[in-house]
Amino acid sequence: MSIDVVLFDLGGVVCRFRPDARAKALAARCDAGEAEVRANLFASGFDDECDRGEHDEPAVLARVRMALGFRGGVAELRRAWATAFVPDPAVLDLVARARRAASTALLTDNGPVLLAALPAELPAVAVAFDHLLFSCVLGATKPGPSAFGGALERAGVASQRAFFVDDSPRNVAAAGALGITAHHFNGPAALQDALVAAGVL
Image (tube, rainbow, N blue to C red; front, side, top):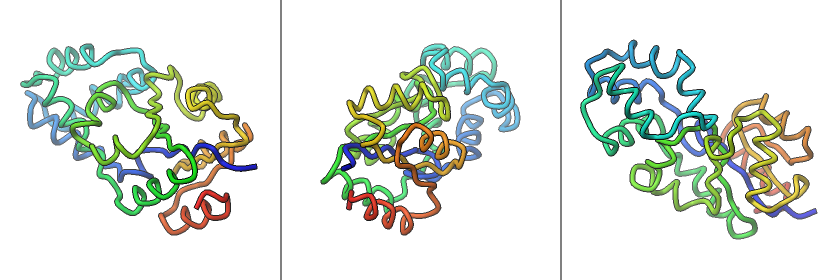
């Protein structure tokens, strides 16, 4: 059976994930240090709530202003947030090649700030995909079946016609249990081989 959509994780696959760079960028605009930024936004569970769609972008901006003394507007917030993600050109090349045979989708556990930031701050990523399937829009995070189910529904394909790549073994196992062809990412070369084996490349 042919593959109609290839779903890519963002942090750790399409982009190298550098959360310390984000904490540093936010702290530079706040009356707080990096440790306080990490504790208030990330270790506290607030960012997880954002990933599930429980807070919109204005709520995030209000949080960083009130709790951390953030000095800036929404554009500065988006810019700082996006510094955690550094696109991998080799993976983006595979995305472009896969797109010749199937639609492509970004399936990521991320919140509204990054979603809004993508076009301006990570334009090469934004234009590479037919579907931007953020958990904050789906209302569910991986490895929950509703995250995958919502993603497949929005992409308009059955699980047996989807290919999924993620750097988390737990997410890969969950996708495979739903009948999705799933690949544990450990580098572009192995991903290329897996896409060839699936008939995408």
